[in-house]
Length: 364
Image (cartoon, rainbow, N blue to C red; front, side, top):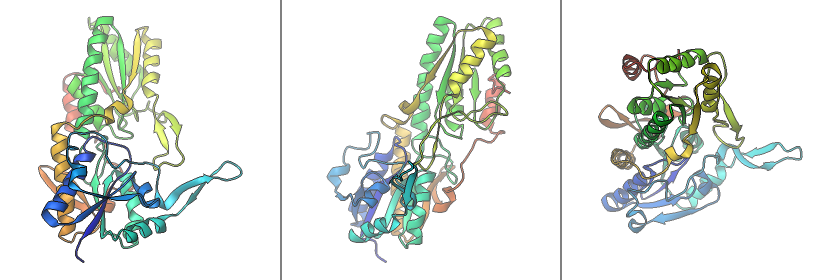
């Protein structure tokens, strides 16, 4: 079937580089292939509510350097399990509204969808594939936890932002002789914290993949003080957990693909260190600062490559594929590869060994 009209959407959390992908897809479609491109607003919510509009070259000009997404995004609108309200007892009611989305696709005569998002977005695309709609996935995440690709756009920008923040904590920690605990994003994967921690020279790096001991962390920090180091920097992933304990959950979102919102481990670590050592401690939670702002040049290039490749394989007849970056090669794999699992940091990863060699503690 000849591809004449395609839809593009951004799902899940926002991420630096989304606009670069949209621009790459739209401009290549218009100028190279003569294909009409339709933007779907707010992820799958736009398909549910029929909020679809054609993207012209003018709409995507000048957006390469902008953070966020001009289409808007949504991390709660799962068409197969769509929240429609609460029952009399206050319990959430969910409906399968995939048929409404398919009707929107048919109404606008879309021959395929390019879905840009993480594992949750790819999972949401599965029912469309079953319904006969071709979907090409473009992986995005600041967590770098998508199975099938070594790296995704957004990650480099996020760990650059996190590194610069840790650098700033370094100077204020040194001035006040404090222990600074910085809580970083990443969910269950420690890639962001590992890279930012290593790049900033953090003294302790706490990852979800390596359960830590509070006594070990406290003794390490105390030993630094005894050796004349007047401060310590601790990079702590939001998904890190004390050995034998569960992750710290800030709150739950019942309508989201990922219901548990992690958060609070940084303060827990800081309080434990203060109690055990008597040292003055402070906690900083970077939060959404890591996801905002313009993409760094490397992410602009990678996002542009991803968008171009996604469109290219679609025009070549590919079905249900997801773009990947492995080594120096942009390729693709089955879209469902990313669903149901996460790419975590191996405990024998070379960066962990390097960090240990310069006397960085992982709290073991």
